[in-house]
Image (cartoon, rainbow, N blue to C red; front, top):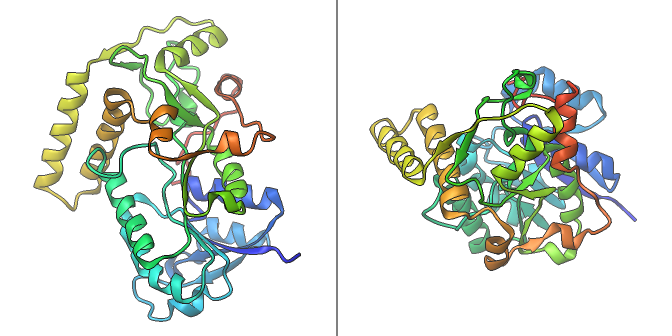
Length: 321
């Protein structure tokens, strides 16, 4: 039986790299990656090519021949960066004309409502709606929050090497449950989801653990032997941070750092004030549960991940950016 041909956009990013690894590990796909002409000679792209993976090179903003670029592809997966999300629009009509059997647009975030709670979510949903308008078969995959950006710092500073932004904040009372997935497992879940007929035209959520901040801190203290003294952040402070970030962005809409501040503050509000990123709300929204779909797959637990970090085996996200 011929393998399905997958074209992956954004293969050199954190999420894209995990997806590429997961697809390769599964052995079920013929994989190619889509890269911009300006990126062809980058070490990260050359490393992919050295693995024998073919690249299709095109600037999606300028090309008028996207249909031929997508020809022969069964599954198109996008892990494009957050600042380029709307560029996916240029691929959609071409994907329909090329007969793509399934498009997986860039989702891979926390569970949240389709409009109004998070700017990042709103922009992703704009792409989803265009896909549905065109009638292209799709699957939306959300992965909660990564373990790699969910652990607290320790008083000793022992694990700061693996932390994107060391902090010891507890939001509200620390009891909001959150869906969490190890970044390495994102691709392993994706490889299962995209060849499953049950997930066609569905939203799917993944997780390795469902933990509150209080539970995360208890695990950190137990495994490290250190006592953590978190700084509380009230719901009012979270809401104020969102308002301030949105005001700053409105004054300079083209500033990417101000946009990131909005994303970060709205993540906190959605996760800890609204408490969106949990299984109950995901089920309410009609998501399929990947853990129920694939009971044979055992993802990495947060406890296992944190033990790796303590042992010096962690990796800081975006370290190569």
